[in-house]
Length: 66
Image 1 (cartoon, rainbow, N blue to C red):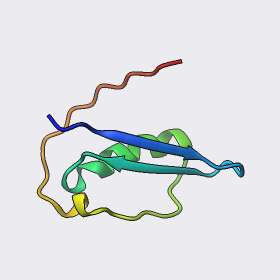
Image 2: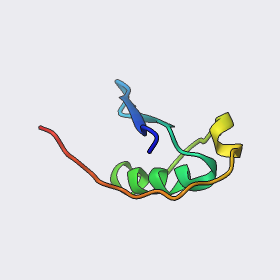
Image 3: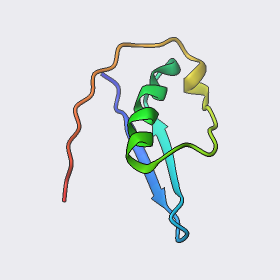
Image 4: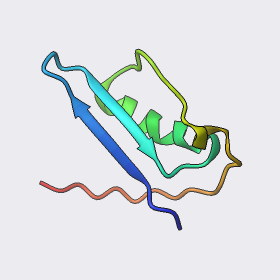
């Protein structure tokens, strides 16, 4: 199973930037929707080359660390 990564940057003005890696096709949109529920509505979106690759089955396991 490929490694999936989320790079989250919170700016000084409170803006949040999310970069999703490791998803093929439009499956990344499901992960983005999960984050959107947490941090709020998207203001902009850019797709990477992975977005245009054939989709694959994805299962989620969320591990929160404090």
